[in-house]
Image (tube, rainbow, N blue to C red; front, side, top):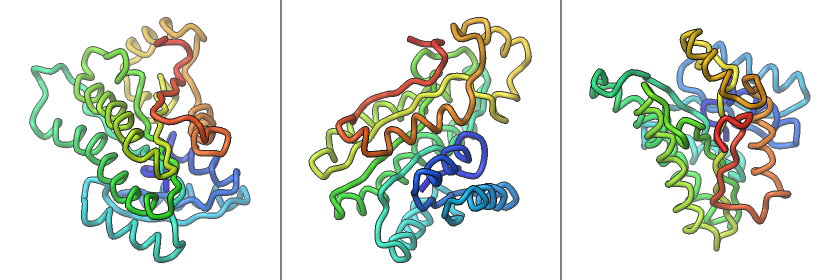
Length: 239
């Protein structure tokens, strides 16, 4: 299951995992057009999957969705916590609604989905959990205190989780992208984009597919002895 799997990095992850033989559950919250387009692309490429609409911040809806997946497929082997939002502003200008949206989706949503999936993985004594953080959660960035807090929280959560579930054959890791060409980064002011571009040793923004390859690695058999780690995909922006 890939949360937020219909657009940007999530869409690339869904396609990459499908091409490696996974049956992919593409989670989305509301954009039917993007979700259908992602599934069609996956199917045209020879992959298999289905759509699953629910809000990851809703405990009941998440539990029901996971139960439905298990009823249909008997298991969940891989969970990719990818869904995320941002509400960038200076700390003194942030409103309570901004906190609720960003922390609620990015951090709480990751925890809610992971808890639901872990119930299944613990019983089957196998699982791969990969959560998407961000370079901003590692190094900080002015005007993104909320986003940085939520993404740093994912790292701490994952390290603790990895210790809890390792004895059950479950690994938990983080992929921390840098500045990747997506709709979200495209909304950044041009001046800010150029500043970050100049700070990236490889001299370019990353591609969604490059993040997807890192996620696929941590989801597969080659990473069976890796847990509690952060794999940075940032072009050298943060070392």
